[in-house]
Image 1 (cartoon, rainbow, N blue to C red):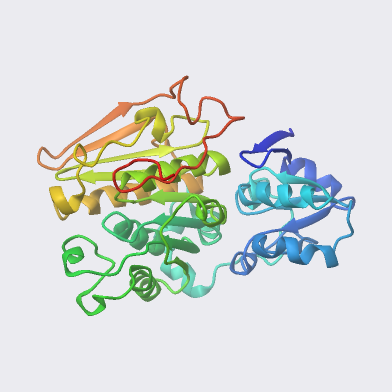
Image 2: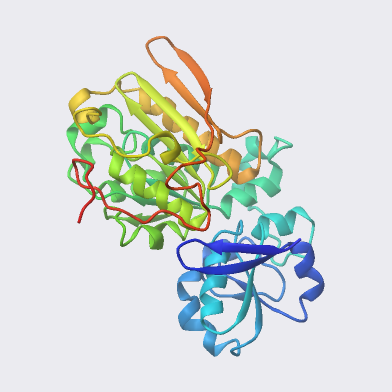
Length: 381
């Protein structure tokens, strides 16, 4: 079935079509693959025009006449919504294919290029492939996925390593910090010889040495309202390992604009929390905490301290939830907050629900305004 989907904050309703509806219309529409070149290497829908999302506006005019009927697709159907928005603004009649190539291939529809795993990949991922719930198809899906990590610190380190080891094909990392000696107690991406190096560069070295299949995209910047949509829109899912409240609220609000799920993690002293914020399918961060607290109520790890192994536990759970979401496996933590007490070695899953009066997600047609908070958690004028 098809239906409208609103690109929140941009003001246009985008038609979504199911793969089963696209298949009989291949001769009538222009099919545009907006994934990145590394993803195309895993295979494409026969006859599709390959134009990465970042090049779409500047390239499509010379390849497709204005007014043509276009169906855009990506890996899971998130980036193609943005692509369809751009194309409609340019005068095309564009829609987005719901579920992307994941949904297309799950139906056994035609696929060009095989996407066959190499001999080395069959060896590397053999334990995944032996799982009936994953198999070769699931491993190819991971290799074609794009995940953005917010932070290359305590939580981002184990998440990055396990996502890379699992074969997530593209990992983006946002961090504007450099490696400091005090990081090494818990931030296992980094090493003594990289002190002073940008964390994103140190992370890229660690990930590349672990798995050369993985493309690492670095964003050596601090997220703010001027760049968050551009950065996040290029990915299928976001892993939030940020260590400050301004970033958490910004990532939450941007995810509501883009419709991109966020796997959230946080740590404090000996306790950690994990949940999944799936826009408009469950609660958002502001359903739990409407406004950022003042710093004296919630001091940072630099002030309060943190048990060194704690982020390893929480970041690994974030990686688990990410892989489950990408593969469509099991029950995610959407609607549940998993709380871990390291001193008691105790896990507690608490139900959490959408707040009907939430200022951010109560009205899907009115996503929150993107706000920058300063270090005291006050809005920046």
